[in-house]
Amino acid sequence: MSFQNHNERREAAEAAKKAMLEKFKTKAQAPVDPAIAEKRAAEAKAREDKRLAGEQRRRERVELEKLERKLAVEAAAKAEADRIVREAEEAAAKLKADAEAEDILAFEQKARRDLKYAARKARQK
Image (tube, rainbow, N blue to C red; front, side):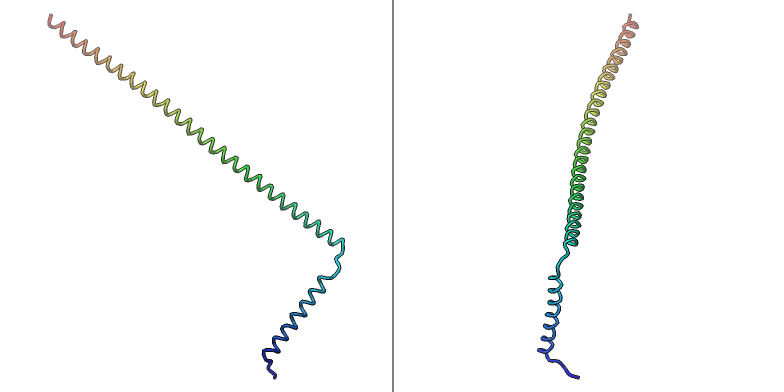
């Protein structure tokens, strides 16, 4: 059983790294078939087109959502304005009805007072 010292292990590791590097270098230098390269380019273009189409759909969806939110805000503002107008009209109608009721009450009180006065005058004669 022999023990390797540090230098021997380092040299063995460097040799293994060089062997792996050579393996990949020779693989990368292999000639590429033009048909395969064309197919890969077409696939890459198809992926890019699909990505762009998806991005365009996302942009359109975002724009549509913005428009929907804007319309919802406008509808809410219009509904609020309509509610305020309706409440103002109801308040004006109530004020008018209250004023009329007050006038009627005042007229009735005056009529009662006049009747009492007339009855008192009739008794005194």
